[in-house]
Image (cartoon, rainbow over all chains, first blue to last red; front, side, top):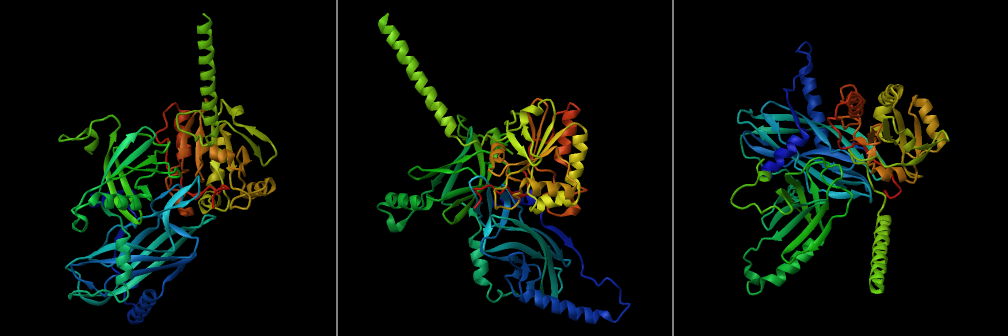
Length: 335
Length: 216
């Protein structure tokens, strides 16, 4: 389920066009420049590594979770946004307006970048225009992979060209940022970067995850998608004698705030209120369809935020009146 | 007989009550009728920056393009600073299309303009719509459920919405993206004028949010 989600994210965006280019000086050793150039590059890298780049109403920085790259291993880079109060950036589906940040990587041969891992967004906006995005501090993680063939070296430069749109409720300002980080490549296991552990842990925690404790079913109810969220009963030893009241209370507490964020555009009426009703072992969320929806939605994909936790949703949409899909797959479920 | 008459009266009164309640409920609905492709375009009356009053109904028999506008929005600036929007306005009005630029920004919000300011903007940019409609209350904007600037609509001579969405397929603020973009408005007009169905009748309108008075 998560990989499908990520794949579709990739399809939807294709924002991480990876350019694998060797960082070579443009002029070939005609001058005695290489040394000077090396020093300048290192200096620039050091500066880029140490200080966040100013962007409109905030700063942006490329950070790494590891102190160095271990050949043949994965690591995470992240775009660290710090935005001034009242300014925001956008989720992969920005909602009614706005655009998500897009990244073009310039990476040495042997290193490849994956797609951005988007944290659970928030609803932003007004009564009639609602967007999905992030305010204040946000870390957009990009999983990176290095080949086993990547040779050990004192420093390699990873660069990202970021196009972004920073908006307040009053205005939008487009921007661009050239970021880079220099990391050594070693064969030894890479320890965590100092001071980055908490930042990355919090960012990972803010990502939507597969729902183990919830089961989601979706019904197409003419003008709305009705999402039924049922708490999957897990053996709770601490409250074994009387699990239900506690569970119900917990559900009530969690479910008072639930929001569905569709991965694809034009499926739902972003600005419409999402009506929540408690159903004993869970809740039901009626999500108004977009009046621009051209054809039936076979699978509803997106993120369901229950309280602070986002869950990945990728569920077949059952037409109301249709039999529940049993042993045989329905046409709608096959895609 | 008398009894039956009473019955009929009761039925009449009850249905009248139901009708009134239904009417009241309808009236209570906000005018977020929206312009759905394939449905009749909601009618409106708008005040143009020229001082003229525009009734959409008067343009039945012509193609009509609606362009939501905010001259402070970088997505709109891309279209105007590249000259693309003006080019489209000139090209299509020359072919008999009525083109309305609509300003739904509330007073004090980005993109709000008085008649004079809008006329100055159009003169400076050499914009050539049929008219620029001042909609500071957001009435027309809400009627069409306009989300962004630019948000484009195309209405056919029968008064049916045939396109609702973005101006083109490059949701960026880069002027460099204009030449290579597929313009959905031109496509819809070209296809419809040559008797073909519009291949892409709905897209996500991209841009800045329309700065309605309810935008905090």
